[in-house]
Length: 328
Ligand SMILES: [Fe+2]
Image 1 (tube, rainbow, N blue to C red):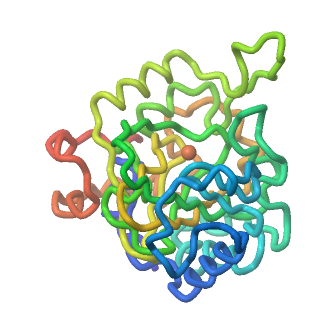
Image 2 (cartoon, rainbow, N blue to C red; image 1 turned 45 degrees about the vertical axis):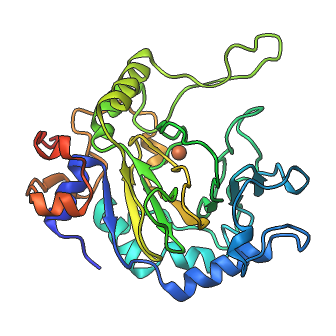
């Protein structure tokens, strides 16, 4: 699988790219079997009975573990994210090939089979998100149970706090529209990128119980203002699709795991592609050329894309009529 100049141009302009039929379906099924096998037999969710799939988990079934979290509507399994079955799914010829086309040949950090899974270090700070420290595989398999009769909730985007280059969300089963697949705010990567102090990283403040107002990541006011503006003026794209479809996304793109108003569990594999030189450039400030660390093909690609292609990619109507210059 090779990306076209049109696909790369769209990715540069909008920060995401939807791709069909990327993951091997037999592998997707095998991975989901592993996920279901991790569920205690006493749980009310039964794989073959969709009527049991509506969330939330009952309080007695919840598990507050970074390696296998079951809480409310979220079921996030990370405990086997360095096992070959999971690594082969993401670091496949197809997907790794595309990642290398974007980040540079032989520039993608390989995973460590049977290494440390995401979540092994617990939360990044008390009450915080999972600590990505020393992660040697994929992020994990993230499921969202259907919300059932829950009232609709607002969409709220964020950017991720840990350093990486290219994100991927792959669907392990069909996810209908409004089914919580993944939501992205197009073009937010180019608006948010310059508001960070560092290209990939973010300053963290220690947590002190006697000084509880600040903990975790420090955001600049410029970032908070721009993110708020994006939420106000840009419609998110719902990355729904069929099993095997993926969305690639830029590390500074605003996104969220969507709300699941469908009747099926959203089953997705999440992973990061990291360049081998991230360790040496993670503290660099945002660059005038925000594509400096991408492949020469990406840097040189300014081919543009057709309106038909943008519609295929579900670009919101307000952006179709407002083309923006692709960054240098
Ligand atoms: Fe995120």
